[in-house]
Length: 452
Image (tube, rainbow, N blue to C red; front, side, top):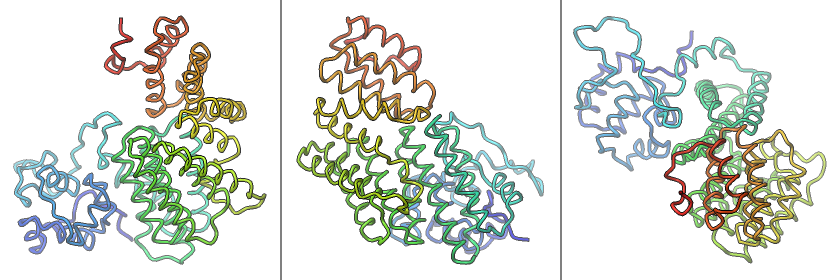
């Protein structure tokens, strides 16, 4: 009977192995990680998650290009891999059973979880969830297994857009770990490639939920993992998609140069693939427009917008679009065009575009409608239409109330700050009251000029 995909504690045979003991004594984590992979089946991506490290950092350690010296990192490794403290020159860890109470078999000590937004990666579902999934699905995935997994991903994305992804994240990560466990065994190439693609999509979705929660460090780690998984099967269009997500995140982090570099790399990946569709190229051109707009480059932004529309016009029925890009329809093209102009301060061009797209957008997409209504309100405010802007922002609040998205909430707080010069206007007062009712937040984000 095959062993579980991932063990929470290292086998006793490894912890008592002289080679492991010696590596821990001198804190040679390159050797420790290699032994953990070879003897316990815990792969670098799993080591990264359990120890709250990035996959790239673990890879650099294994390759000998980086040393881990900081005590807090060493403690995370001890806790994440369940290496007893004395082996690494640390005090006894909280999860270790006191020597006087040790027994041959024991249940792992459960820790109290911090609030969801501060969960360490190691606190997400682990071996118990993996074991249940293995019992349910078996260990010999078939084409129907792959289709079932893809269907669940489509459902996750729908629920993410309608309600937010924070509550979905534990289930998505549990499924990601399960699929990674299946990848340990050699399988027929179509099945193995399908599993890599599914794991990459689950990692990207997890990264997206962290991005939407403005947890950028965790988001980047999962996006990086998605890239690595897609690279294993040379899925260049999907790698382009992940890089485009990372480019968008860079604009939120006020790193416009990084945003442009990332989307340029995304377009390079798309050009490397013979099957990249016009819809994918259009989406990437629009992300390029966002990056140029963040840099304040009007000419380059307008050129990228024109390219996005030109590529979109080449879309034909029956094009083999990957499922992850089907969201990029005509209303999305139009609203993104408006947002790009809005980022440049071209409110007169942006307002009618965003308003038109918002009218045509699926009303079930609560987060998207909240996000786009914010942008419409922002352009209306830029044009001096204070009352109309507040009415639109109130509509955004209605949608925001139905979805958990710190990104959307942050935009609405940003809009509130922009209302500071108009604090005595009745519609502004009414919007503030509604904002406090729908999105209760600490007072420190309220500008002093708007406090009474």
